[in-house]
Image 1: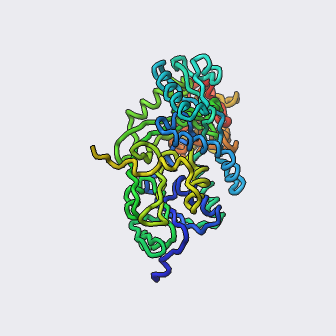
Image 2: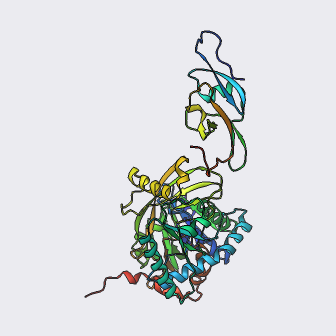
Image 3: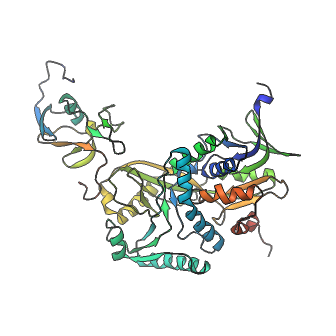
Length: 375
Length: 102
């Protein structure tokens, strides 16, 4: 092959084919841009394929009103976004936002979580709905709940969807809109040109006016190539899924949800174990035991699959959205909640990438906040 | 359809029921084999589309032979030996979770 056959020219190069990258890439083609999306390979750590599928509001943004507001707005944008994806692709992402639960096994946990939600509500000037359910009230909403659950926090804005269907819908919508997906491309280096960037991936070279880094954990190494920083770390979560059973649980909860096709998905752990996405019997047992306390009827249900996946966590758990000052046209986007935030990423964030005004909350999501302060 | 190879098999006969229908099997056979021999296809219907299914691998891997055995849902028919008086039912779609059989 000649050099030119190995060179792809585009206006926007999005690095990362997960939910964050595909949301941005789809948003860009929807806005009429010429976009090339690079997806690494099946050996990449794919949070987009291992996550729990929650569209989750409650407890996000304790101590960060900007993140709480951003999350509330993102959840509110979901119904229209899901309808739009269904219309463009025929893929039903199984979105349900009828309210979610966080089960608490004792009163201390219920009180602690209530206090967190109360502080977020105060931060947002009271505009933050939630209810504290004692055991009796919880049982009215979810009759299958176990006797040793003290109560639950009910967040009416919370919901869930099928994350694999979402990823497929985003890719289809991106391609149907004229976007180019290049799979199996791992970016090794990025060079700055006078009028854009040159990204090298294997034998291929991608020339683009703009570059958006949405490579999850890969952003850590890529961001400094264009004058940005993304100090993200992996955090492992383990998940179990059961055989399909008749619907019994309409409301998603933080640790147990039933999918649209009947599978019960059970999570999760939070483990600092580096780039290790294996499962461990000890964590799976602990997760299963907690789920059994919440829902004793799961005792007779078969587990059919377990897996581990790596969250993409910044030091404070909040997103990083940043334009490069030294390399205009380069951006980094990373967050833990790619599902919840997808509609805003495709909409408001893309508007900003294309030169529109920066959404208010974004000021709180710059990487400088991690710089060490001298004492 | 499926038949035992003629001759020489002196194993005891075992009687089970599939959806109330009597099926004769031989001691030591798996439930899946006994039902294949009895022409009990399909074994199950799928939870999402309701498609009919029957055993594929007969070695515990494919999960296509799921049945309700003595009140237990989603049992792999190829991994359970026949017993006299066993009550087997077709697994219709997704199993019940509420009041599920233990």
